[in-house]
Length: 410
Image (cartoon, rainbow, N blue to C red):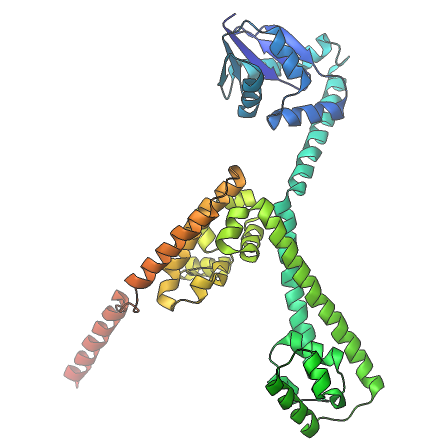
């Protein structure tokens, strides 16, 4: 026989000729969960025992036609004949239309009602399997981790503000001297009362000799209220919890970095772990990010501004979360849009490689991006001269005509 159609069904795999006659078949065991698992493996391009067995039964065939590319991929590994993908396949549709009758013919189901129940169970198990696989993807874990960091940042800002206000009753001058929240919270937790701001304690905490001297003098001359140890104790406990949150944030950053190495190494190499993770989170998944055009990636995170621009006719945003990229926020205003476009273009390539190929090309992409950024900086060193919009010109002309008319009237 020259040509055979292989059709995968919920009953098993069937070899069918051009007239729609079943030549050979390899049926699954009647177990809904096992059938769903085997169908899922076939859809993923894996070789299952039933596929190997039916391939041995149709050895003298020149061409095999299948509907699914993943099934064709699996067949090419175990079969030497020509494998063709035809979708939709009229023969496969014809066979699937006969499945309720074939189920009764092959003693899979005694009645149509029993077949419908079996098909429902298989569909339910298959759906659960696909959902579980989607949930197991590490890009979803990365998205949750970066969103957790955002939540922690909000909490830390809130906690640090409360600690500054609370501790400011005792040592108000410290607020202006120490800008960094974490250092401020450490001082509250480690030293507490102003009397503990002595050279030995401050040096142990790693402050420079100049800063030690400043802190000592401020503690001695402070206008803050004197408070008791028992009043300082709850504040120090609060500061201790806040420091643990800072530590948790650091551990989450390390976790994201390690996960991005495995899941999206090209994105990580191009824009860093945290920004890459935030882009995956905003897109919904790595695959969704890979399917996005560069123009969409460029404005991810600025959806509100984009829709406002579309609604009101205002200028659209030049970048969204990509503003966090150092080359963008560190450049003059008039260069940012062009650099964001270049970064988004390379990110689109990196995301597609990570999602569908797995090859590491981040170093090449980074070098090309840096070269393009240098070109932009050289080409646009000064801000462009803005032309007055046509509408403004017309309004001015109308005003002048009105003024002339008024003068003539007088």
